[in-house]
Length: 484
Ligand code: ADP
Ligand code: MG
Image: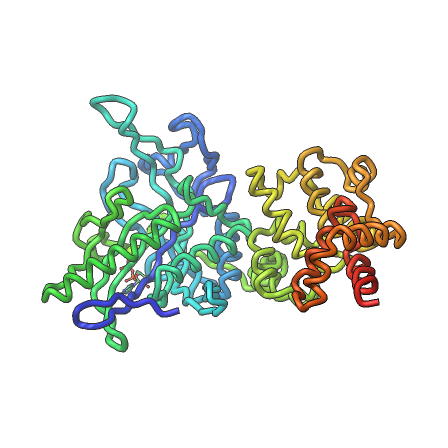
């Protein structure tokens, strides 16, 4: 989908590249055995290494390396069997070492790609430049004391994956789709929980603008944006700012900016630091990281089925649309639920019920699929009641609603409320006769050409049977009675 900013000198195109920091799911930190548990008392999950004591030796955590490799495989990326760790030097109160151990010239993961789906049904491929491992910093607490700030090092040394995209993104929508897809892949892999509001996934957003076909222009980097909505807003606002600068004859400076959602603006934080400002150099405490191809192969063999593959399989195996399949693979738990319901049943009707009334009921009750009061077995049992003619589709909606309220099995509800479908021809005929007699005037209009009234008769017969009549039989009987 094209997205252009109409300036006075013509249309401008947006160029975006994203750097995502994703906290690795791991019990212990990247170079120490300290716990990564969230929410502990300040400074209770800190080893001497994380606290930057002199003479401490970092030891690489094999589990974190495996998570990075698995993520690389999920991003269809090149796995570098040899990578290196560098020190990125800077001073900050939440960084006791005075440097961050990161990977600069030799990251563990090289080029990969992510396919994104857009709202018009089209897909695009966004290139991944690299993924590297690095340490997180601690956290400053400014709200504990009126005069002093404190530092909590619980997060210091926790493993992060920095995932850098190519400047392939062209619209705010694509940026959102990229982040959702990346988060989905990380969650399927179990390498990052993707919770942006808890800070375990955050994005630096690089934005520039250009006239179509031109080379790239100077970009600005908006730091630490912590929701997908804010990312799309920040891009729109920053791009508009840059267009205005270029059009008024100015120059965009390369700088780091902050997004202020409250004011709807980006603000300069500092002029862009260059790599040499950090005086990167190989960490002398760590050997190059060498991994075996056989280990990579082993990790690959144990990967779960990922969203793209799962979507293609569900489409093929259950005959459902790409759209429905996309909705159903949004989360692994939803896909599992769907497959339990659909197995041995009509996959299309299972998909229709899940994406329709079932999700609506979940939304209404504010529950996630894991907390659903109606399990896959019960939803499946309800589908069986429709398939074998015990209830019709309309009554099924009522049954499902009651299932959400009481947790009963569908058949129990049908018996208790007397909702069995009426397939007794005599009963339906009687109701049809009554409806036609009572509405003789409408019948005349219908016979005079007002075809739409047929639906009215059907509705009236359904009403007379409390919605329980078999709709196909009602149609057939009415036709026979009217047309002979
Ligand atoms: P660094 O931030 O360390 O300088 P890079 O120069 O490799 O790293 O770029 C970081 C991010 O900026 C990448 O995601 C890349 O896609 C993006 N980027 C690079 N050039 C541009 C540009 N002209 N416009 C928008 N994004 C860009
Ligand atoms: Mg950067």
